[in-house]
Image 1 (tube, rainbow, N blue to C red):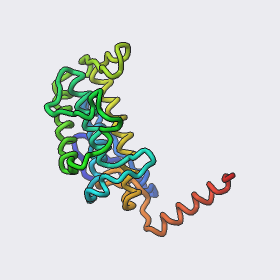
Image 2 (cartoon, rainbow, N blue to C red):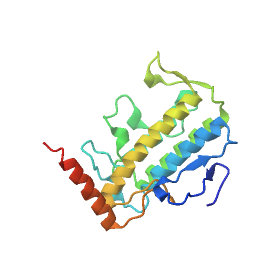
Image 3 (tube, rainbow, N blue to C red):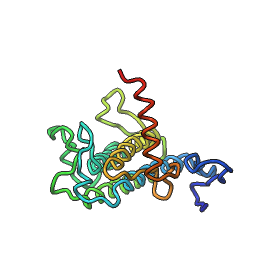
Image 4 (tube, rainbow, N blue to C red):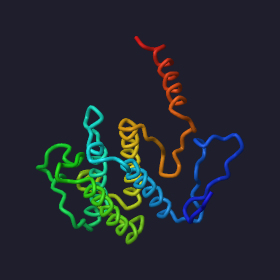
Length: 220
């Protein structure tokens, strides 16, 4: 396995399936590097879920509340600009009218017809670059204020917001994982490491049937 400055792979133990393999972080990293690496991994996983899909599939609402892939990316771009921009007095350069007080509900959770997939993905990448500039410029204990958390909870620092953003991005990357599988069956943890047992459609069909059979035992 290849290695880099950030991740070191443990050798695969005999008899251990691919799904059990886990990377370990380079112990020489600083706390900020550890946090930014985890955040970047989740960002990459999110964008990977969009690869190979057309405008139609990227916009399809596939849950009862309308969850869709482009909406997840647009939302997270807005959040990156918010937490690593306005909170530290470093506002992003792009207007975001869907985040204003008078915007419609959920306006940040879908792409309008005039917001192309290319634009939304570019918007996310720009927001992440702006965030990375803030992260690079500040110490972990740098203080900021989150106005939408309210006056009592809003005082915070960079370390807490990095942890918060990792959790936020991972949550929505998980949403994207499920939405993508519903679209075309594509699944996996990240590009180059699906983190799944190796099996064809027959294997997965049998696995799902088995689980359905277990669930059926508890059906009222």
